[in-house]
Image (cartoon, rainbow, N blue to C red; front, side):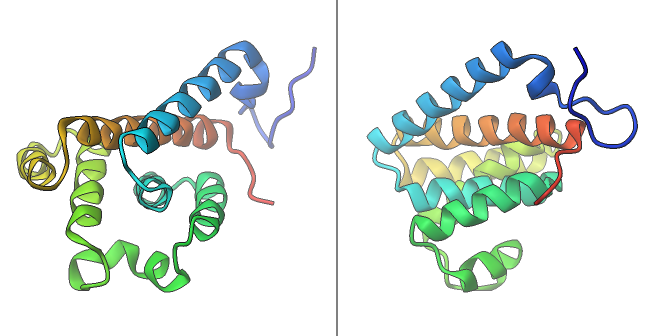
Length: 155
């Protein structure tokens, strides 16, 4: 059976392994549901999704999650300044902590940033909320890899 693919030899791995992809989507839905149940707002979760997708250079996921963030009530201005979040006061302490933790999850090799990110999260999040932010970052990191490796187009 031929696979849908972009130019070259990059198969859409989500289409090539549909059962795995569907299982992964169910897991992502569970992560989101648990994060909201823990008290995290959908707009915060989408900020994490957008920032991690920026760090990973995933245009496909940025397209999906910027639209989701806007639907969740996020403003275009805040999304626009997200990469420069440290130089602005438009993000709350909780948002900054979540974004720092998401970056640490995305780049765990940057050991110097890991402990400060955990320390900032411990100040403003419960253990359950911290876990939910981490799982959200893990999930979007994995979806970023699926899209980047598959070379999913932005339409």
